Image (cartoon, rainbow, N blue to C red):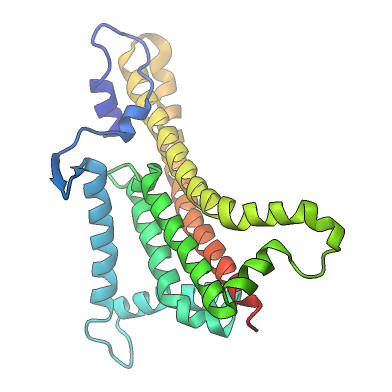
Length: 270
């Protein structure tokens, strides 16, 4: 579908390959409105994010709607999914104290998975995380959370002192270590969280579109180029499965790093 849309946007007098552009990430707004002086736009990508969020919410609500001692298939799937994050990430990375963060970590993981997977769903075929806004919001929430947890657990002074002056480091090295630790913890953590997720979804979408559009072009251009169309089509299928793996992996990495930052914020309180 993306290939068809992009092909339709090509100049009619251009017989060459119409490469995908960043315009795919900035669709025309479906509606616009202002609220308290702030302008808002509802685009196709916004609707896709709403659908992804509604789908994952519906799955978990339905899985616990009528819980039974011997779980049904849907209940078992919901419990297994939550247990994966609770036991495999929260408990494993943070420890026993991580159980109170399990709901947040599970919400982050499955929200990212749902939005990422929309990148390979027909008629959607773009992840809302392929725009920097959504990853930036997720990274911002995580940033506020682990700093709040650190301050509440250790106190304002000890928390920031631990960041600026990590114990066990020779005092002469603080000239070099202190600015690195401050920048790493308070600046680069949210940036890398957001950019890693955004860049992978952005690149993955463009890669799939290139192979899909390449197949359409090779079928339409005529001459012997048509013999290469199946190769491009097969690569599009292969890259779709590869992209699915990347989508789930990026959700896992984001959640594990979030748990790691929370563990670090709690560390001095133990």
